[in-house]
Image (cartoon, rainbow, N blue to C red):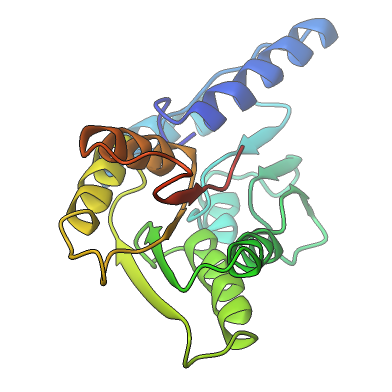
Amino acid sequence: VPGFSDSNISETLSGVFSEAEKMGFTVVPINLGHSESANERNLQLLKIIGFDAVIILKDNVDINALREKYQLENTPILLVGHYVDDPKIHCIDTDREIGMYKAVKYLISLGHKRIAYLSAPLDNLTAIARKKGIEKALAEADPNSLHFTLHTGHDSIENGFQMAGTLMKDTKEERPTAIVAFNDLVAMGCLHALNTYKYKVPDDISVIGFDD
């Protein structure tokens, strides 16, 4: 798991623990953060413990390297929240591209002309897929009447607050009328910033997020 601060990860883990208990299985969480050395130490558990199956909630894991290095060729693997084209890997995922496409199309249908997207860094499949959906919706709109800006930062409440706060310092003519948030954490930070700057949602500005 990529840490425990994300509410979606916590909720998913809660469901995993609940169902595993009913079936008589024990779940052992392995944290994968930003430290490669710490990740390496934590992943040693895959060799030490003979797991019946592995569930992966992190989307930038090299599955083939993981299977080979930790001898998981015959261990069932489930990816949650992302997809790989491998018949040996089970996947549960959402269509991020379509989700963001629909979100932006909805905002455009409401008459929004200035839309800002608060994104996570574009270095993983999740962020790339969501951006692709947004670009598809923008491509179908009138480019002469729509102003779109992309802002990147870590997908956290703090960065959502900072990015939205920066946008609110623009002049009224430049300020977006709608903000698309990468996920719920960014959306919460965004709403906090808007409240701090005395903007009403949705009267003054609209906010739409992904990952409910």
